[in-house]
Image (cartoon, rainbow, N blue to C red; front, side, top):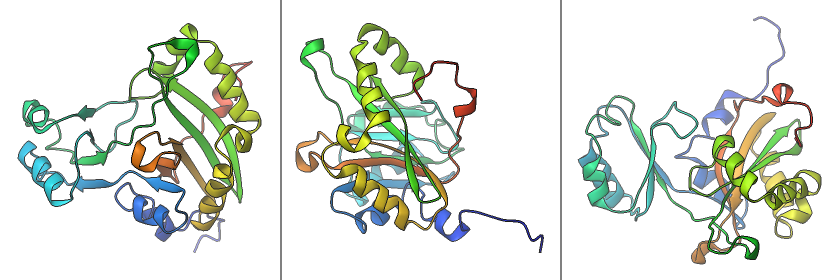
Length: 232
């Protein structure tokens, strides 16, 4: 025994995987949700396996296919029908396995950008019982990252005002009560530290619910590397 302090009990960390998250979240609040997800391990991630797993799990199109262990949109694609799965290279996910993730629409439109469709992704860090807003990235595609949001912000600088609103008053920026619901859910997970990515669903069947894309007890925190003047 080293006698060193530790955080994040391993048994709680395991519950935060993509496949388990929808069940965990559903038990906490009916205003929160996570996209349904099925994982196919290496050796069982052929294109035919993907289509069969979707049918067995009652997952409809569109879905996101994502290999574990990659970031920044690598090895991730949105497919709209079975024909698009058949067009994928057979080797694409065979060696890594693949997550088949329900696509929950969170896109929105704004009168200041007629004809444009925007996809938001919020991030917060839960640390020692407190929930801190970290950033709001907005893209014009379903893959939302800093690199895809920067050119969109340049064309539509009012989006930066939305991020500032979230950073300074998340409980007022999000629909009433959702920040509180998220904080209470994160507090109940039994973790000391966890990053969470989320947005508000605009899909008709769950409109207004908070969609948790990822709850990661090992999410990197590069705040100390941000340049001077960054709003975070």
